[in-house]
Length: 285
Image (cartoon, rainbow, N blue to C red):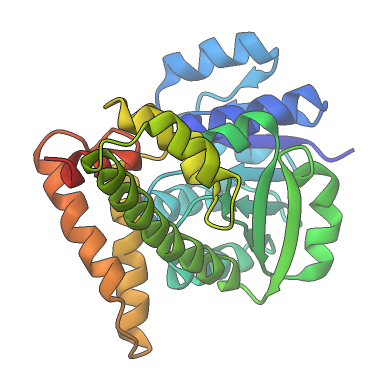
């Protein structure tokens, strides 16, 4: 049986690691903050690596969930020091497709396979093991680790060559920006009309304009509560990636640009770590 390690225990990584452990796949974890790793290791009853190098030397499959492109490349360079040939690295971070290709090239020199496998579904999906996963890389390698990934995701789709998973995630993030703009603007309009917000959210959630964001964030945002979820600062980071990718192929993304400006205002006002539903705050100011 393949031994699995997990690197990155942020809001998404914790849920994914927990589900790997519950299904018996997880053998070892590592987190930059050692105290968090040890606490979580006790909860999950799995080994805690003191370094990335230690984890790489002791498992066959490494799942990654880090925040930024530079973080991923730093981790991959460190993994390459001790990783065993024929290991598999599955990156579930959100980075650029160029960075995914760089990571794959670094690991290929060590005879290690790499899948870029970003996810969608938010913290709720990570905790429930019901993420959607979009995968770039060798289809045969995906099939080899699919049972492991199914502990975290209910929909796993092979998109194509390395980098296409991240390109698909960019599509998702652009769409998420549009949904955020539409839902927050519409609910701000409803509030200005003095409509009963709970009833508005209930009826529209079950109609043609219903969506996950409205169902899961509608009530909290209209109460001025922006719970721990998908952070404004992280979506801003993702949309900057999308913006650069758009520039590279000559396509303009005006809605993305608008959302970036709004997020920059939110970050300046102290909402960087709030859920992206904090955009509602700007609509009703």
